[in-house]
Length: 67
Image 1 (cartoon, rainbow, N blue to C red):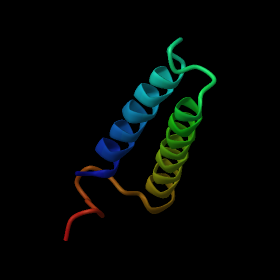
Image 2 (cartoon, one colour; image 1 turned 180 degrees about the horizontal axis):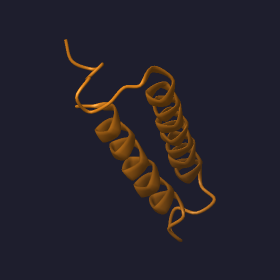
Image 3 (cartoon, rainbow, N blue to C red; image 1 turned 45 degrees about the horizontal axis):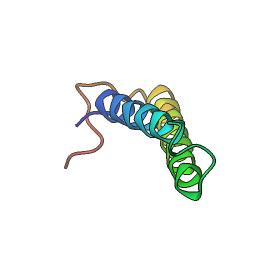
Image 4 (cartoon, rainbow, N blue to C red; image 1 turned 180 degrees about the vertical axis):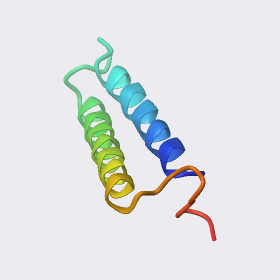
């Protein structure tokens, strides 16, 4: 998996968790709070990976996640 795929996957999961947290049956519950925290964390990690990709010039051809 390259950086762009990892960022995309994190963003998709973040969005899915946020939608689940905002469903009427989950809204304003401990479970929704937990989902929102996970969503925020994934969004944060996606942004950090995007920044690393920019700083170090990671491209799909130069994969930093595989040995």
